[in-house]
Amino acid sequence: MAFAIKAGIGDPGAETFRFVAQKTMYGGKRIAAGDAVFVFASDHEGGRGLIARGMVVSAKPVAKKPGLARQTPRVSLTVRIVARAKRPLGRNQLKGYADWDDGRPETELNFKFYRQATNKIIGLSDDAARFLDRFF
Image 1 (cartoon, rainbow, N blue to C red):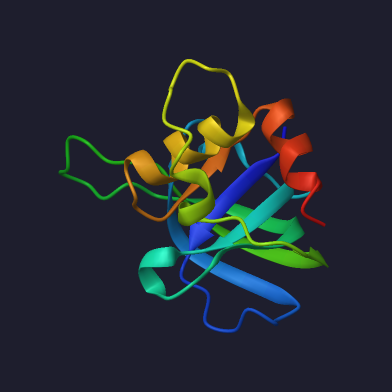
Image 2: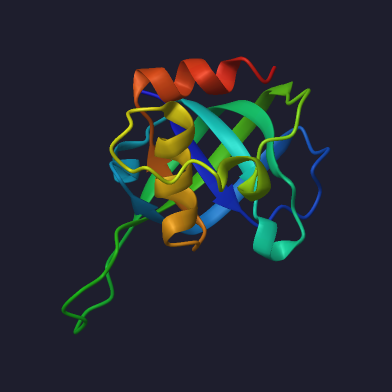
């Protein structure tokens, strides 16, 4: 299974990214070392969307805080970049794909990343991963 992360990216040209205590949704908590991950620079933090494809070097679940009833699972990751995106793909390119039942990979990405626009790690379908591979 492939994954994607949308987060604030300080240096988009870095060879390695470290993400601390990132929220997970849509199967994102299953990310592990060796998994492929697509990196999106958060639009809300000045990013432009898809910037890179990488390999997870390490993934560690973050312990839940005691006393809180509902907590979204969080994971800390280190990702080594293996390719840079050659074309843009972000909120502006995906916002037109809002028919949640059409089965398109663009719609899956729009739904998982931008319906609730928080930064997060998500699991991807095989179709969405193949679609993202076309940007490299």
